[in-house]
Every structure is written in C-alpha cells, then in structure tokens.
Image 1 (tube, helix red, strand yellow):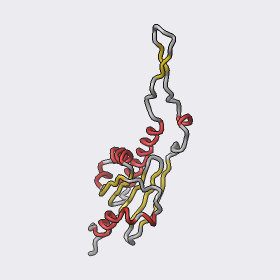
Image 2 (cartoon, one colour):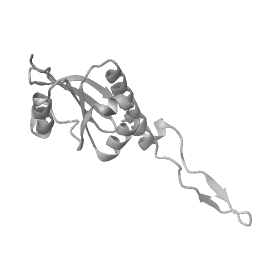
Image 3 (tube, rainbow, N blue to C red):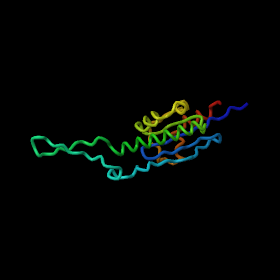
Image 4 (tube, rainbow, N blue to C red):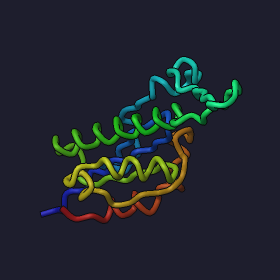
Length: 156
C-alpha cells in the first residue's frame, strides 16, 4: 500500500491580505483562496473616532490633550488575524488539510496562532516570520522548499 501524500495548506498573511495555497499530490503549488481586510485601506477617520480627548486643570482654563487609547489600524489587523484563524479552524474541522504552514510577519503570526483551535494547531508543521503575500505563486518555491519537500516525504 502506498502512503497517502499530505495535503499541505500554506497561508501567507499580513495585516491586510491572506492567501491560501495548497500543495497537492501532483507536487504543484496552487492558489486556493484569498481574503482581504475590508478596513485595510480606510483612513483612520473612516475607521472611527478614537481622537484624544482633552482635560482641564481645575485652577486654569488650559486644556491638555490626552493620548489616544487605541491604534484603530492595529485593532483592524488583529480582527483580520482572527478572521484568518476562524477560516483555518473551519477548514481543519472539515478535514480540508493534513498539514498547515503559516507565513506572516511576527505580530500577525503570533495573533493567528493564538486564535487557532487545538485540532488546527496540531496540524501546524511550521511558521515562517516573513511577509510573502505579494510574491507571485510561481516565485514562492524557493521560500517554501523545506516544507514542500517534507510534505512529499510524508507518510499517512
């Protein structure tokens, strides 16, 4: 009986985009799906108002600006990481892949991994701290070679 090749899912993500690639039994890397953050290219004013407030001193009429509590773009990136994690958790529950490779900048990678369910995290074979989202599929092979070769050698 021949071993069944691993179905490797590769996720390339940054704070605004995610690409899902599959490496199948035919040894070809293919784009499977993509996600884009809706709020990624909005101006801060369009994201909401988290402008600094002002405080008064009781003995003067001077106002002092208070620093903002949140970076709205950073919050949107965290929400997007949660969306990517949810999609991966659903795919794992549907047994859509055997192995998972995450490729993202450090902060995004940490946020995605934190939100993975236990069954999804168990399929994680690697994490690469790089931003490869904008690299064309046909140019990704050198960046992903160690994991692609491992999927070729995998047993059931």
